[in-house]
Length: 92
Picture 1 (cartoon, rainbow, N blue to C red):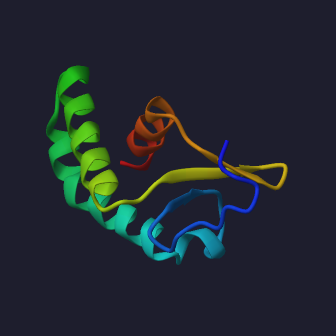
Picture 2 (picture 1 turned 30 degrees about the horizontal axis):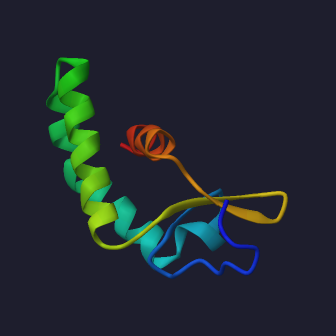
């Protein structure tokens, strides 16, 4: 859990639906990086190869300083690496 007074940075990737999430700079960057790797991901035959592509997308996003965060009952939580990996895989 993040501090109660935590305010997400514009660079953070917020998990949620709708325009309020999709238009944030961090979410746009995440979408752009996912789009850049879609063809490579689609060309993968083995699950391990797909996982490597997902890990590369995740590395690029995290190296920008972004956090993957979600809000539950009004409180912001940093997503685990596994949750962020799953979200990235679904996005691709």
